[in-house]
Amino acid sequence: MKVNWKGVIPAITTPFNADLTVDESFLAKHSRWLVDEGSVGLVPIGSLGESATLSPAEKRKVMETCVKTVGDRVPVIPGIAALSTAEAVTLAKDAKAIGCSALMVLPPYVYSSDWREMKAHVSAVIAATDLPCMLYNNPIAYKTDFLPRHILELAGELPNLHAVKESSADLRRVMAIRALSGARVQILVGVDDAIVEAIDAGAIGWIAGLVNAFPAESVALYRYAREGRKAEAFSLYQWFLPLLRMDTVVKFVQLIKLAQQRVGMGSDRVRPPRLQLSGEELREAMTVIDSALATRPQLKAELSSNAPVKVPTY
Image (cartoon, rainbow, N blue to C red; front, side, top):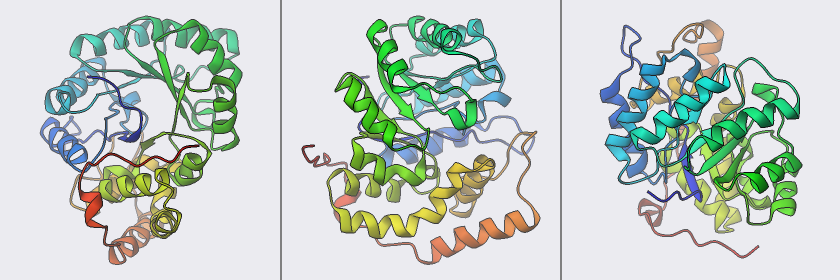
């Protein structure tokens, strides 16, 4: 399966049964729905997928379910993150053996240090297979910042590093990476409430969060932005922003799963140490979600198909 980095690629949530075991049946259903609605790939076992709370066996099972369900339609691109380099390398090799099409490579959990150590870690993971890789840069969450010059250095040494998920929330990074790497590194954005601006700066893909509950609107927003349809993009973005901002806070997993529950596509169950929202937090979140549902826009019929996106020349 060839990887198409140009489009909306959900970072999917991991659904749980009442006993907090992984709900594989719903995972398959959710994956099919996201692809049917126009997603061009899936990213399981990432931060939004509560990867840190999953056992190695559970991670393998999630990957297997996604590959079996939609792997013949879109690339499955699991998040590769672990406490140790050896564990991350093993997970990367497992992903290839299972049939995943590419990898999203993260810095190690908990430990963050200097460029020498972080380069050694991600280089070992990327070099562990020949699968296309996307580096995940999220200094806000992981305290490791891969600067544009670091990304260029990695790309010069690792031929299977094809893309970067840039989640620093600094839009200047998109242009800086483009200026240094040209077309060598594809740029995707993982900050939901900056997607229109990032595409305008040259990003070509969106590793999205609220897409788990609102795939049609996510695909429409991406298309409007990529096709330069600014008035339509602004109108949809204005409606979507209160929801998209849920992707950028500490309890983003709880909030996105709550949104899924409200649209009838999932439950708000999470694994500890996360807890389901309650009290004022829950009331505020429900107000935002219910207001959005009450004013949900009617999308144009043209967006119901998977017709090619008309991309302007930069």
